[in-house]
Image 1 (cartoon, rainbow, N blue to C red):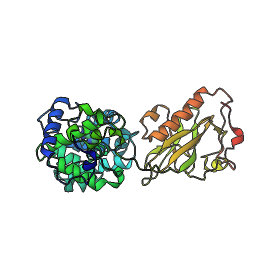
Image 2: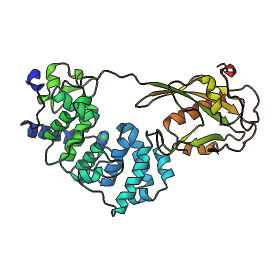
Image 3: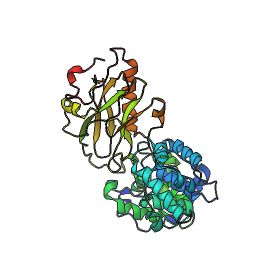
Amino acid sequence: MIDPMKANAEPLKSDRRSPEVARRVLQWFDRHRRSLPWRAASGQRADPYLVWLSEILLQQTNVPTATPYFEKFRTLWPRVENLADAPLDDVMRAFSGLGYYSRARNLHACAKEVVRRGGVFPASEAELRALPGIGAYTAAAIAAIAFDRKASPVDGNIARIVARLYAIEEPIARARAKIAAAAAALTPTERSGDFAQALMDIGSTICTPRSPNCLACPMQFICAAAASGDPQAYPRKLARKERPARRGAAFFAEAVDGGVLLRTRPLNGLLGSTVELPGTAWSVDFALEEAGAAAPFSAPWRLTPGTVDQIFTHFSLRLSVYAARLLERPPAPEGCFWVGRKALDDVAFSSLMRKAVMHGRSFMEQDQSGPAAKPVNRRPNGPSTKRRSSP
Ligand code: ADE
């Protein structure tokens, strides 16, 4: 049994137990590996395009969420050339709901760059990193999984495993270099890709954040956190920083034919080039009374009950939604466009805006009150809370 206090010393840049760790981990992987659509059969080389695609789609999300996206992308664009040739709009639409849209743009740019280089992905971490959208983690994952290079991708799951193995006392954010060095020291020179994928699987199924199943873990024999008797106490937590709370309002205008008024966000910045409802800026000092200035036109706007909430990395957002039913389909104001009811499913909304559109739509469907109204081209006053409809 390891003495957790001793193990807590500086994690080793080389660990003499590494070969035995790798042997046990790879043996575990051969028996328990998850069958995932981008993985090659045991002993086979994976397709670098599919490995790259899966790693991009898995950034900031998990296997159950990313898998249907992966299947959709693979069906639409089975080869990197097909993806490179696709219109960016189609790629954005296929990516819709998966998070930051700069990732979709980079995905497309990377496919184009790889095709420019003859359709072949580079094998080294350094060359992979030079491609759009590929950071240190993704480069290491592709190098290891697709090319069996000795590389040690460290994502949140693997950082947690390493922090536990060595009972690291600093929170992960302050121990990144230490964790990376320890992960590299454990990585075998052969079957590095399987070793990385084994750690990913162990992180997802055994060494989970809240209730690690240490008895099933092939690394238990060196794990200082398991030896301490309280493995979930690692990784140590960083004191939580409060996220600023931003607020804003969006306007759901439904034309007589069911069309909805939309606009596209600027290319650069948060949710860049995704489609949204027109609305106010999102800010910490937002005042609902002033939201009307951002209405696209004058209409009998009603404040819908409830809000649409979303947590972003650096702030939380609470969006109020105004809705109006119109007697006609007026010309779209500058910067906006109408999208017909059926085509809405295919719009490249962010998940926030898809929620906001559904919020507006379900309000309209439940709303029995009042006839539709003709919009007036620009309204002097926006909506006011006085018009709030009661639920
Ligand atoms: N998470 C990130 N990359 C992964 C992969 N290749 N397999 C399983 N989970 C992952």
